[in-house]
Length: 184
Image (cartoon, rainbow, N blue to C red; front, side):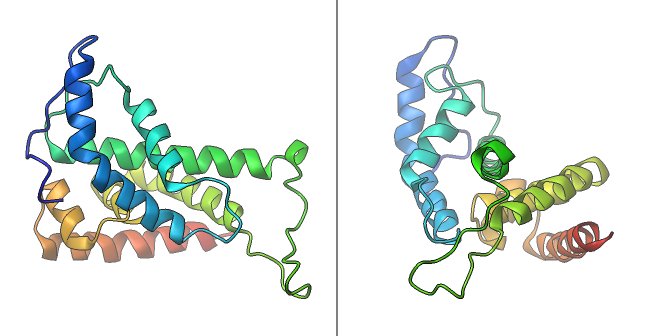
């Protein structure tokens, strides 16, 4: 993350060259984060890290990038875009018309069924929405850690808080989300 400037260039209305400059600066980092996130997904995913980065870039505005205040603003938006893509994908996959009620079976080991990752992502999304209403900074930390794959130090840097503060926020957010996700 050190190679990304503190204030990334912004593309004005229709300024495709500035958008391309920004993409060139952040692409490798976004790709690494997407690869990290996709490595944590259940086997058999059809979404590739490159596709996740490209879809997130398009959701961020593509060639018509908005004005980014700083790195924190850009990476928070990128993390949110990746989160939304994965949530939308989980919802789509779990929809009844797409066979969401079915159970995926690993044919190599017929006695083992794949974990219901999509249901967990949907539960996390709902709990995260509640946490955002309760404490947006802690919710942003969770998004950066879980969906963008940043380390605690990197997320603290992006959010502009100290590492000890980020550690306290992370402990609080994890406990808060656990309680929200396990409550009946």
